[in-house]
Amino acid sequence: MTNRSLGVRRAALLASSVALLGLLAGCGDGDDTASAPPSESGTAAPATTSTTATPSDPGPGSGVPTDAASASRTPSAPPSPAGGTRCHTSELSASVGRNNPGAGQENFPVVLTNRSSRTCTLHGYPGTAFVDASGRQLGPDPQRSATAPETVKLAPGQSAWAGLSFANPEVSGAGTATPAALLVTPPDEEDPLKVPWKSGQVPVSGNESSVRLIPFSPGTGA
Image (cartoon, rainbow, N blue to C red; front, top):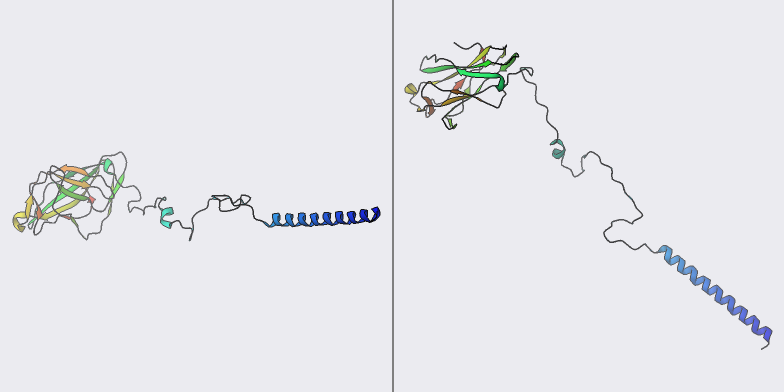
């Protein structure tokens, strides 16, 4: 073989080698491009993906109970019949007037007096409970009459009274106890006023043991 022929053959082999290397390189680039990036432990999405959560009010289907959202809101109270001017416990003093018995009944006026410097109102019934010296209630809860209540306006120093009555235990045969005090709670209030009870035994069990109340009226009931 001549030197010229040997040179031509070497050139052809070199060209083929270059072409083969180029083909292999091209296949390698395609595999790298198609392969997914390795997953990162503890992530639910590729590191290149960014999701920003914006706070919003929970709605239906949000997974947040609707009562949990409403629990943080203070419900608006219904309007008071007294127009928001009612007398508060701290503005009042309480007393029990003289008994006015009749027809086997004992009848006492429960009196609240406005000792504040403003005019306020009472509407409805007092809460009442006979208690012993330790504060334990004696007898059942009182019963309210069907009389429609009126709003009583009290200027400073003025009073209103509500009727408290029960059957005479000697007539009814009810079981009795002698209270240490009568607790009186003004309408729509929670804190009571304590009035010493000085009128003897009251019915607490058996027949005719209920105490009955009528709503407030102007005056002292005397």
